[in-house]
Length: 229
Image 1 (cartoon, rainbow, N blue to C red):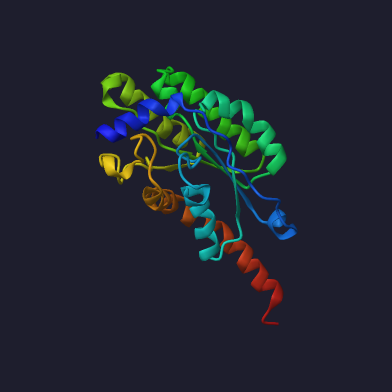
Image 2: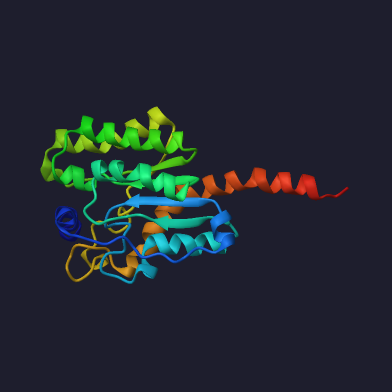
C-alpha cells in the first residue's frame, strides 16, 4: 500500500509533456478517433511511451480488428479544471468519436471540493456529447488519510456524474496492483511498464464492448449494401 499512497501523493508535483504523435495518414484521418484526456497515469511517465497503456490500447484495437485511432492528450499533473480548459480546442482539432476522461486524482490530492470536481467532470462530459463524441469517465481514488467523509465524496463523484450523464465508467485502473510496491518504478511513484497491460485490461473491460457494439451497425450496414444480392 505504501507504493500506492506515495504514487498518489506525488503525482501532483510532477511535470510532463504530452506524448509525441505522428503525422496521420489519410486512412488514419478517416478512422474513428479516441481522445484520451488524462494525467500522468495516461502519459506513460518514466517509461517508453510505446509501453504505456494508451499505446497498448492502439495495439489492442488493431489486434481486435477495430479501426479506431487513439490520440493521447494527457499531461502529468493535469486537473479537471485544466482538462476542461483544454478540451474545446482538442475537440475542434481532433473531432473525436470517443473521449476518455482520466482526470480527478490531482484534484483530490489538492482537496478540491467534491461539488467542483463534479461540476468540471459534468462540463467535460457535456462538451464531449455536444461535439458528437461519447464520453467515458475513469474512476479515481485517493488515500484514506484524506478523511472518510471527503474520500467517500470524492469517489462517489465519478459515479454520480456517470449516472446523471449516461457516460460509461471505467473502474479504478490501478486496483489490480495498487497494494504492490513492486508494480511501480524505482521512484515509487509511477506504474512500471510491466504494470501497463493490467491497466489496459481494466480499461478494455469497459471500453472494448462499447467499441465492438458501436462497430457492429456499420458492419451490418456494409453487408446489407454489398450482398448477397
